[in-house]
Amino acid sequence: MIEQQYYTREKKGIFSSTPGYDTIAKSSGLEDEFIKDTIHSLCFYAAPAFLAGEKDLSKYPKVLFYANAGDGKIIIGQSVFAGKDYTLKRNRYFTHCYVVPENERKLYIENPEKVIYASGFVENYDMEKGTSIESLREIKVERTYDVFNSIEDLFLAASIDKNTFINMIKACFDAAAFNKKIYIVVSYNKNMDKVIKGILKYLYRSLPFAVRGKVGFTTYVKQPEIKEFINIEFLLEGSIKRLTQDVKAGYVFDMADNNFYLEGIDEGHHVFIDFVMNNIENERALNEFFIQADNDCSREKFTIDMYDNILCPSSQSEEVKKSPICMKENEQVEHKHNLVYFLKKLFSNKD
Image 1: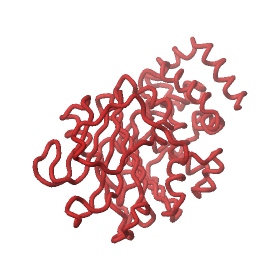
Image 2: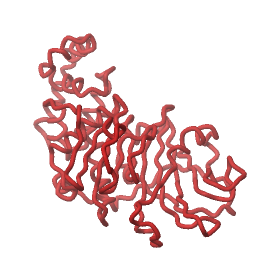
Image 3: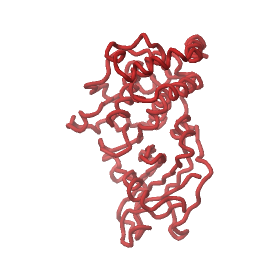
Image 4: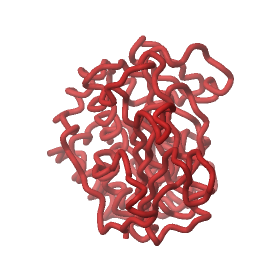
């Protein structure tokens, strides 16, 4: 079952008897310690400065976030600017979280669009209804924002090119391996949410399951944030005033100003990247490969070279070839004739 939690500023909450931000309602299957130790840190929102005083709540960006907690649970949440609190004087935000249990995790990892287009979030709650809310059998999916029929359509709308997208894929591997942050800056306009979710749809489609299951995202932050379980952060143009040491520890894709900071990113050519881009519109083919790769690649699942090796052992660098891990992988691949046949089919049938 999918558990739920609501969080906002109120007179009191479940864990606090004094006014302030707290969980105000939850389903019975959520442990108190998990809420306080993990979920609360993901419940945050800061409105864009240029919207100060704006009363039309629809103009404020909504935040969709996705986090893989260390115990196997997945958190999918939405935070929104919710206007005045109970005092009618102070502004507040409202967060609604879904918590996917470990035994349902695979479904969301293998189908990231269930995360990216998750819906059914509430944006307010009457505490007179009590502090207990129901568990759900499933999370609703709303495809209204799924408007790009091809990656070329996305590139045009997002003002990015193939090479930039490839660097985003590479950055995600570093995010999974080294907890790097990825800052993607977009223009503020009516199509912003569609573009952001389009980038996420194609980006997560390109990633092996192990990487998908490690890299979290949030679709809006006011300024760069260091949050546990969150790697990809979308910001509005002008949000990164300067490259601080924290920002320089990650990667910056500023599409609004066509400005990039990619110090240390992998500049090599990879068979795996070619394979992904050749099959980017064939989600079934990619997932079938990722399932096979997940079984074959016992370790180093956050390294692109390992996926190069599975696709084409001869493509390895000398350094990778000589590593004990890779030598073991080579022995396994040599005996997997069914995988070689399968990959030939994928390269020759890109429908």
